[in-house]
Image 1 (cartoon, one colour):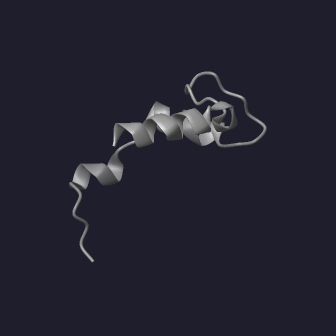
Image 2: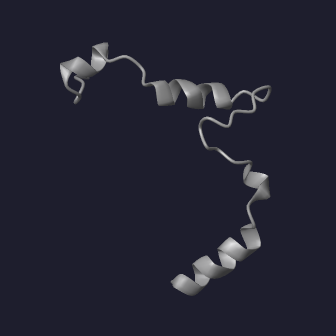
Length: 55
């Protein structure tokens, strides 16, 4: 199957952001660089309540 991407994409280097995000997926790393807060700290009930109101 032929790729639909431009040829230059096959030689493109990974972005710095992607590298940081890959590192932050490791459980032993706590990174403040990527801006990824712990999802368990989100007020899920409040977010869901307000999201339903906005529909």
